[in-house]
Image 1: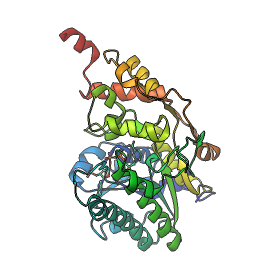
Image 2: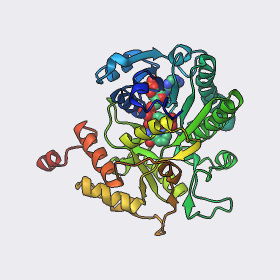
Image 3: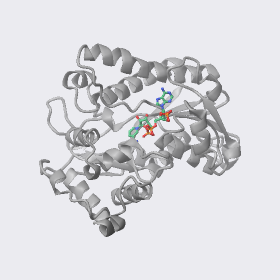
Image 4: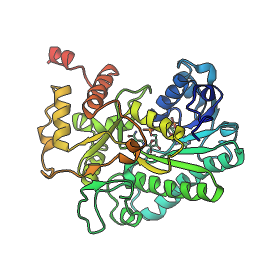
Length: 358
Ligand SMILES: NC(=O)c1ccc[n+]([C@@H]2O[C@H](COP(=O)([O-])OP(=O)(O)OC[C@H]3O[C@@H](n4cnc5c(N)ncnc54)[C@H](OP(=O)(O)O)[C@@H]3O)[C@@H](O)[C@H]2O)c1
């Protein structure tokens, strides 16, 4: 991809069809809207086409949108959706973080979660291989595949795409959210392997916590995780703490930037391999200070306690920025816009109204 026939040239965009899996989700829905805004024709896949229709059909450019019913768990389910597409954004994934079974937990996770996740991703890739038209797949990975700890357990100063979380360590230590970490590690590994065998160009984008505004009717899980020190959500706050303990801080990216980066990596001829896409990060004390500024009724102090007072490792997005990608939003914007959108959607109480009622 790239050069005169690159899909980024306006004439080529107008005739280019791309597919987005998981189009009803936080990233998927925003990505569909961004692609339509740029003039692409989009095949959006969803398990529930009614949900997709009510969410996506309001976007401008919707005459270039087609919705397909596809499920990762159904073989052949993506064949129609990817037919005729030049690129596929494989965004869909289960967002299951933990399991509640007590016995034979490893067998359960393997047979019920990680194997189906891998099979689901291979389902999409096999459809791409059969279609013949697909030149590039952009796979949405996760910062959960990355760790700041080296093989001696010491913190690295610089974290990049090579700082991969070892799969055996996840099985052995089972940190909070371990099931999700395993699924992302295994699906990405198998996706690269399959793409190499079939000669398909696959690029992986590694988002940290994605937040900011949202188009979905429910508050995205990642926004809920980010705000969990305000809401005190007992299931999600430990995920935030777990990210902090693995990376020494909470790296962030704005929803618009992560979608722009997905499109950028499709359009860039030189894009190869994995790309971290993080604009910056906050330690827990910094994050709670920022949340208190945006949401003054939040008394954050107790959430900021107990975290080491150490300089956090740098989480590098240099591979991406060296190719020419530019971030539009910083950490403060992300937090400000997440809080504002959650107040607007009644997920957080409006501080002014709350003051009146108290
Ligand atoms: N948001 C973040 O902070 C973040 C960070 C790192 C990586 N990621 C990755 O980004 C991707 C999207 O995340 P998100 O935040 O947008 O999550 P999300 O809002 O939960 O979206 C997940 C999407 O995947 C779909 N999906 C789940 N299981 C499926 C199945 N069996 N078959 C077909 N579709 C299925 C969901 O469909 P339904 O609407 O039908 O449930 C939904 O459209 C995921 O791969 C995730 O691992 C996200």
